Structure formats: C-alpha cells, structure tokens
Length: 286
Image 1: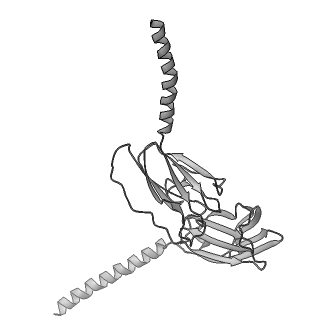
Image 2: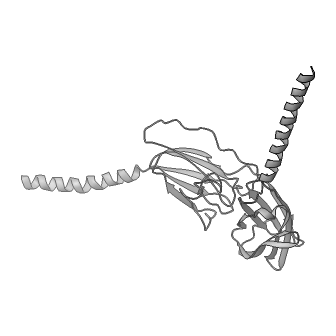
Image 3: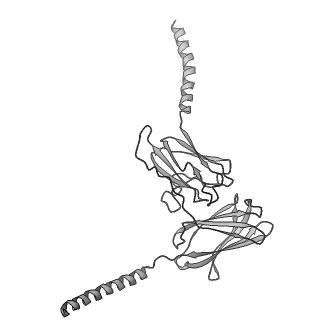
C-alpha cells in the first residue's frame, strides 16, 4: 500500500510541477507600445502609442515598429538628460520596420524615453509597485515643435533636416536628424554623404563617407565658443547614381557674454548712484 501511495505521489508530482512552472511563466506581465506608421515625419503628430503607459514592477514592455523607418527606444527626455541612454537603450542598429525590442522594468518610478533618430517621438513608462496605488503624474508628454528644413538637389533628391534642441548654442550637443528621399519619395538606403559645416568660407566640421541607413542618418555636433554666427551646412556627394549636394543656412546663437553682464551691472550701479545723489540734492534744495 505504501508503494502505491509513493507511485501516486510521484505521478502527481510529474503533472503538478510542470503545470506550476507553466502557470508561473504565463503570469509574467507583458505590455506593448506601438511606433505608429508615419512617426518619422515630424509634422505627422505620430509617435509612440500610448505615449504614457502605466505598468507594475516586473512588467516587460515591448515596442513594435509599425513605421516604414527605423527607430530607437532610449531612456531620458533628450540627449541632455542625465539618464540619456543609461537606463535602457535599444541603440544601434535601429529597430527595423516590422521588428520589435523589449525591456523589463524591475523598479518603480517614471521613465521618460525618446527616439534618438526622431527626437520628436517621446514617451513615458510609469512603473508602480505590484498591487500598490502610488501617486503618479498622469500628464501626457507633449511633443516639442522642432525646427525643420528641406532642400532638393537638381536631380530631385530631397533632404529633410531637423535638430534638437531648437536653439543651436556653442558648448551644447546638437543632434541633427537627416532624412534622404529619392525623386519618387522613397527613403534612400545604402548610400554615403559628406557632412560639412562652413563658417566664413572655412570648414569647421568635415565628416566624410557618413552612412545612410533606412533613409535616415544622425549627426551629433558640439560647436565651439568661437564658432557663433551664420553657418552653412553642406551635405556633399550624396552617393546615388552621381554625387548630389544640398545646403542649409543655420545660425549658431552665442551665449549671453559674461563681460556684457558685467557692463550692464555697472550701468545699473551708476544709474542707481546718480539717482541717489540727485535725490539728495533735490531734498537739500527744498
């Protein structure tokens, strides 16, 4: 009889243990975010859906790319954020159209993120403790209106340029997004170009043979303090059937000079002194 009991227990164990393991696996939390079709166009209003997603600790979020261009999922609000790319980053190569990328959130908090190639695409993952209702921001991240310019070569190649932050200042990293289209409006792939900034007739930045992947390229530039003023961005030798060139006129805005601040402070001090003395004279005359 004892032998029969042992056999029954062994059979039940072989059935229950796999079922328990299956139940544990099935209980794992998943959530999805879609990269909408048209997100690569800064004027489309498309991006991550939902923009703000609330999940519990331990949830794996998967981003699915429904767009025709590649994207990234990078932690931080933008490239100036201290958490830029540190908490999670799909990095490069880009998440291709039809592909996905996932990340498991193992602690509570609010985690903003964006696409490095298309920085107008922003989102937020709000992670709560399991079963807990903690105060959280319900505001939906707003889309920043980014500057955009387009230019077309004589052969009909169109280049769209955008950058973030919107004001180009020396000492700050500026992320330029370049999108290349052929004359039929299709993204250009497997091509090269030269990336050149010209100031007062001289090349201040010259990068040769930059690659175009899935119609898009990303350039990060930090200008020096002595490079302010009008500049020309030239995209040269775009490698299709023949080299194509386009140019954009941009302005590097100087920071407010410290010397100017001193001058203005001195002017105010002198004005205050004159006003004080003039007031004393008026009292004396009266």
